Amino acid sequence: MQSEASNDTLPNTERRVKSKLTATEFAIRYGFIALTLGLVLFFSIFAEGFAGPYSAVFIFQSVAITGILALGVTVTLVVDGFDLSIGSVATTSLMLSSYVLVVWEMSAFAAVAACLAMGAIVGLINGLLIVKMRVPDLLATLGMMFLLVGLQRIPTQGRSIATGMTLPDGRVAEGIFSKAFLALGRHRFDFFIDNLIPVSVIVLLVVGFLVWGFMELTRHGRIMYAIGSNQRAASLAGANVNRYKILAYMISGVLASVGGILLAARLGRGDIASGNNLLLDSVAAALIGFAVLGAAKPNAFGTIIGALFIGILLQGLTMMNAPYYTQDFVKGAVLVVALVFTFALSKRGGAH
Picture (cartoon, rainbow, N blue to C red):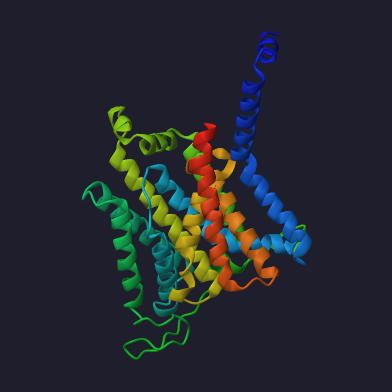
């Protein structure tokens, strides 16, 4: 009763201001979700074949690897860092798994284990460079990116890796991509329709759930958010800042290597050029995630929605025969709008 009486006594001008702020907050919280649903509706009407289970699965499959990498970027953003090497780690994982299978003729298990170990070691080196050597995160991961780009080309002198390729020493590689390894990128599970859901989509959903649960529900995740908000205060409160930052970069490296494994399994060959857009797309998805539900902070749920948004946009534009060279422009425009939502409107609306 008291609240209603208070509202009745508000001057008209103040009431209008209150209404405007509420509308702004609504736009901050739900504007991006509404934009995503609007895009789906638009493409469903104007792009023939867009609305359907196979189209939806294709979108999920196209963003699965990008989404996994973006979750790694998100973890480093949480501790106020940034991992520029994530695309190179994924491509190195792609080449390493191909080399282990085709040149060394080892098993799928060995290829996966080698890639995961490589990702963890790269993340560990990145973390040590940042917290022990005091190298700024952007410079440390940029240096690692160039190092990995060079390292990928040395064993094969820049050639793609495939069965029957001639090695630099004149030998012919006779190893093959085993069925068990190819199944990681090509097998599909039945879901109402036979052979509908690819393994990569399941991996994305599982990784997304695990990262979300770790960051939002565990003490360690809350400490990492605290480090990202105020590193000195977190340190004074007893948090081991260096250890958590190194952990964040190791998680990022392992997730990037998982993305590279799935890409190699889908392609069935090791091609350096295959990972050209992984860095930009994963960073865009992680940054767009800031704007989802007005979070204004890195978060796993927002990152997956950001990756899906990019996938919907590109799939719809492709089905409407939009020129390929316009797609990067559209992606950039969407990213700018998302950043405006995050950093301008959220401050004005007082959202967190």
